[in-house]
Length: 294
Length: 299
Image (cartoon, rainbow over all chains, first blue to last red; front, top):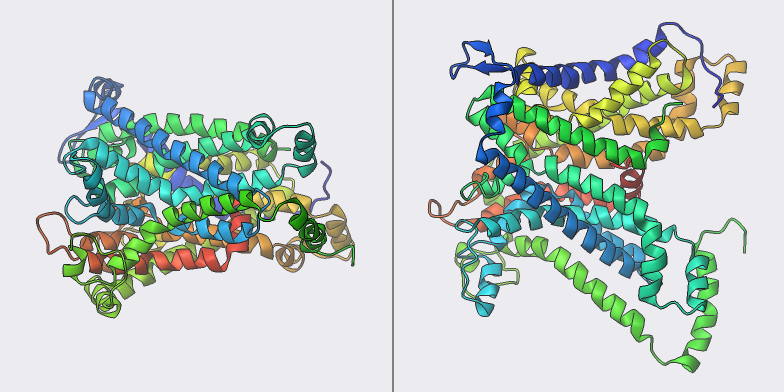
């Protein structure tokens, strides 16, 4: 692309300087620190550090708790993503059925995005409250099973998944709506004329045309639930009961900040970095035309 | 009708024949009734947690713990909100959250505009490196560099400070990409004409690009405000003084943990309502910009 440019020797550097400075100081420096720390062991009082090579990683990958936290992370992330995408597509598909009030419905489902997941977590904490909550009360009519998140790991997991998905469903709806509204009506009308019913039209035309957006949302939801999930866990379950909701990000924080095991925490950070780089690379394969440097 | 009419005008024209024909074909469109009913159920399900939180925030403790649960508002709203306001240093918490949200959003927009301007309108050595350095920040969320970022902030002496709360949030690859993308859609003739008239780069940015960018700035601001207001891990790590807490974290102190407290969920929910109202109100009031910001920053 040809673009006429300004000629100035120093100015462009001054213009990028603020962002580059923030990036180097708060992104690159800490990331390299994490890499370095992951190869060292710090004594409990922080007065001695010794080089241990890959020992931190070896230890980490031989502890069952770490695998537990990986499993929890994937349960959490797939729960949030499945609910978010499923509900998002369902609502968006309904709202675009040539009915009135599309904008009003969009408003009515979008606002939970403004609620911080930890606050959503607190609200769901009360909804799930074993003694006062409305959900165990209602479920009590159906079954005598005790839905107590303090005792049962999977109930605690359901609590944090639902709270997180609740705040994020509006985001998915907004994207699906944009995607659905971009599908030319002529294509759908042509299919109608050829005798395709609503379900057939959805399966054969709409869904394939939506697949880039679905893929993008899939990756964004996964990244969001891997990394944006810290608050809800910290505010509500603290990883409990019995580690049932201890996800990877929470464990990095717990081992480093509370347990002061800096080496292990840094090693976990490095593994998480590899994960997020993989996911981001996937995400940008979808939008690569936007970021290709020309 | 003018050709430049909005999409609402043709829609009205299209609706007209339907009104005329409808009685002949069928008396009532059951399909759209079903769709509306399903949508209203979805809206109700999505709204329920907030409604429930609001209801609890208007009740006395006796009503909160009543069985069966009382699902309609009571009359104790003012007491509970006043109690929550006083007990949790709410004014201070809200003030801190507002500072973090507004300063980090404006700072991010400012530095992103500048760097995107440099990348689009200048050729300079190291441009590709600068671009990729900005891009890579996408892959380093704070969650993966918790301990070391804490140490960096500590060595700068920025713990418990507004600088520590806001400046590290300002590096944003997405905002830079949005501005870069937007600048590239600005016709080249504009900058050529400006250069012929002897307009320098900073004046061009200020007097030509900035006025064209307001829609993008508004959209980014809404998204970044919400992002900043709802920050959790970052302020949790770098603040431990009561005075520097943000509201999302300050709420924790009010959670009635089972067995140890009077179950004052009414006060808890009153505080939660105050903490979630500003970002939700921003979404509702600036909805148009919010949707634009969400879709166009694509993250």
